[in-house]
Image 1 (tube, rainbow, N blue to C red):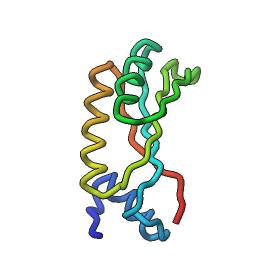
Image 2: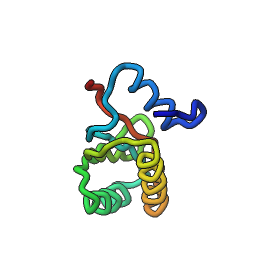
Image 3: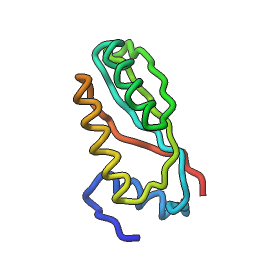
Image 4: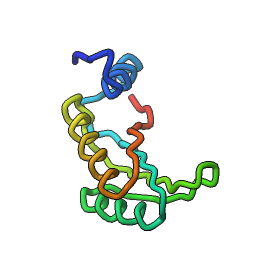
Length: 108
């Protein structure tokens, strides 16, 4: 698998690959969003649940934002992650929030 060393998705996935993670298998993927109100976070959570994600919403007293954590399972191929990221950016913007990226627990 080739990676673009300048794109955040590829940098992260290259690191996983170097650590021996199997990127061709479905993995747990965590998506992180921030919203200014509980209503906007809940609205986004409802939409992302329709895509098969489990969601949790937390208040962040440090910056008075609401964190939406969405957890799902996908095969994180480079193109797939890129498309998911675009979809998540749009979803966050539609509810007045910000998409902060994704992560995955390390497992080989």
